[in-house]
Length: 421
Ligand SMILES: Cc1ncc(COP(=O)(O)O)c(C=O)c1O
Image (cartoon, rainbow, N blue to C red; front, top):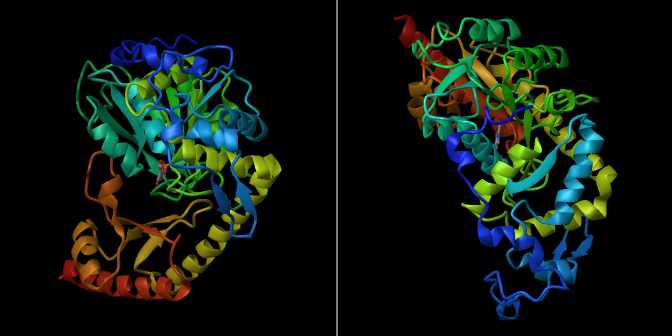
C-alpha cells in the first residue's frame, strides 16, 4: 500500500531527532559515547527494585535492565518488551501482513498520535456513534470534522457505512460539498466504550471489505479485547488485514494496571515510524520503570501465563456483568432498555418514559441522590441530545449495584412523570 495519502503534511514534515536517532548506539559496549546527553546514573539514588505480587511471589528486577530503565532508552520502548509484545501479536492475531510495534504511555498516547498522523486540515474522520470520549476529546482539538457511523445494538451497520461513503459528500452531515471522502475509521470493536457492544466477525469482515473498497485506514482501539466473556475471542481487524490498512492499539490498563501507563500500537512499519517521530518530538519514550515492571512480570508468566491471567480477569468481569444485569432486570425493566455486553465493563442504557435528553437527569437529579452515571451526550460525535446513559459495573459490589439502580429508577420515574405532564 502507498501510505503517503494517509499521512498528514505535518506528520510527513517530522524528521528524526538527531539525538534520539543515535539512541540505539548509546548502550553498545564497543562505542565510547561522547554523544547523547545522558545524565550519569551513578547520581541516581535507586539501587534495585523488588516487587511482591498478590500471590506472594517476589520479583527482583534484573539489575542490568533496571539500571538501563533508569536512564533514557529507545523511543519505541524497551527492546525486550517490544519483542515480547511482537510475539504476543503473532500468537494471538496470526497476522498475514508485515508489522511493527511501538510502546506508548497507555493506548491513549498512541491512538491520539495515530489519529494526528492521519489528519490534514479539512479532513473528515469516521467514528462510531456513540464513541469513546477520550478519542472525541482529542478529535475536537484537530482541524477535522468528526462524522458518526450509524450503529444498532450489534455495532456499526455495514450497509449504513457503505451508503455514507457511496453518497459522500452529500451524506456529510457537516454539509461541506467538496470535502474529500474520509480516509480513517476510528473504532473500538470489542466491549465498546460506551456501547458495551462487540461487533461480530461477520460484520467486521463486511466493514473491512468496505474499507478496502474505499481505501480507508482502520484505527482499531481494542482496549477491552482481552475482556471478552465467551470461550473464543472475536478475531480482530488486525488479524483479518490483508492490505496493511489496520493500525491496532492495545492496552495493559484493563489487565495489569492502568497506572502503569503501558499500551502498544501494531501496524504498518511506515506508520509506526511516523508515530515514533512524534514521540521523539513530544514525550521522548514511555516510562522505563513501568516498562520494566511489565516486562519482568510478562517474562516470568510467559505467553501462556499471560493468557491464563487475562482469562481470570475476563471471568471476574463476567461475574460482575451477570450481577449487574440481575440488578438491571430488577430495577430498570420498563424504565430503560439495554443490550447485555459480551465484553468490557459498560452497559449503554436507553432511558424510556419519554426522556429524550439524559443530561440534566444525570448531572443534577441523579447526583443529588448520590448516584453517578455518565450522560450519553459525552459520547456523541456531534454532541446531540440523547436519552442514553453509560453505566459501569467494574468497581461496584452487589449491594451498591442494587442501591444505585434503585435510586436511578426513582429519578427516572420522577422525570418520566414530569415529561408526561
Ligand atoms: C476505548 C478506550 N480506548 C483507550 C483508552 C485509554 O486506555 P489507556 O489507559 O491504555 O491509555 C480507554 C480508557 O478508558 C478506552 O476506554
